[in-house]
Length: 264
Length: 264
Image (cartoon, rainbow over the protein chains, first blue to last red):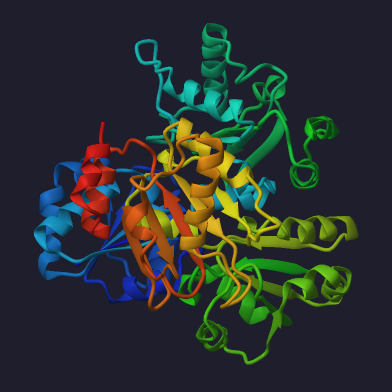
């Protein structure tokens, strides 16, 4: 059987249920591709589970050897550890469906996701978020407009957007600054009022890691900040805020008092 | 100091970090109002934490005695346990902000929410959900149109909606059936194509409890099901599904093969 386990953003977010399963599992894999996390996390996971035997999996390893991976679980109890909530990476549904087809039991233990943590550190309300959007690594030849257009839809409904930015390694990732540049570029093409220098946004780098940065300010100022290594995320604030949201941004994130003007 | 702790949907979802804090806390409160859960959960929490001393709090108790509650934490380490993710109930931001004002340290430990679990059990993709909507207890004199209108916006953007249904006790709650009736009533007034007998939806009762029911079918058929005690939730599926979503609904929830027609 396979148990797909989200351990949360940090190892300490792991659930009691997950730990119980991991201690009993015959083999523990740790997926090290949909997220970039410090190597200290691997050591911490080993210590918590009480094993040295955790096999790191890269994306290609899992996707190209899915059959082999699943076959191994026919006779063994395989645990696949994933940062955050496993269901935030759409690839894991493939494993679940393959197991179903092959008659291999497969269970998912949810983990605390970046979305859960964003709510806790910003005080923004879950009811005020539109659809989740992600922006892939961009280049001159690859600059899709769909992330911009999806944010535009949220904005039109006066909703915040949590924008996840792709990171494949410590050096190859989309930074908050790059994401802002991309959005400004799209803005000048589509003019759907998604972003301007004066739009309030939140730059989130390495949330819940030891040296994370989270900053709420106008886009103009966020662009000047050096956020450092990945993972990065960006929250675009809707045109209007609930008064408790404005207060929370000021109190919890030291946002400029100006955000109060967004309360209507 | 106060630590606001989401324990997840079931006690076993509790994080290692939360357990550590709870074992050290001087006083543990359990909020028993934003969610309705079986009394066995209280026993399980006591066993896990290793204490008999958990004080149950009702909504009024917390809201009317917020000052007293916060003052108690000036000299003691108070832990406030909440089902799910604390930030899904907007009331908790009040505690955080009051603490800030009074100079009392306050921290939030996130918990696995119904949204996390919904993704795991349905296989629906997080990128396909619009804003979260909740419907309060309704009566002849209280029938707001806003939940309907919010779902309509999601539907217009071809997004699913997770609809949380209010429950204040085992007998006083909005059932899936009542919610469907409400939406059909609103539909006949506004005609925004939110719901019809043939719309596919998912009825979710007591998710992750020992005897939960989760059923994906046409609204027409969901209306005939007796879902039993709360909490209930409803997921309205968008007009179109990703092909992996359709496959997941069939494989994981035994949805009718017909949902494949929604894949475009």
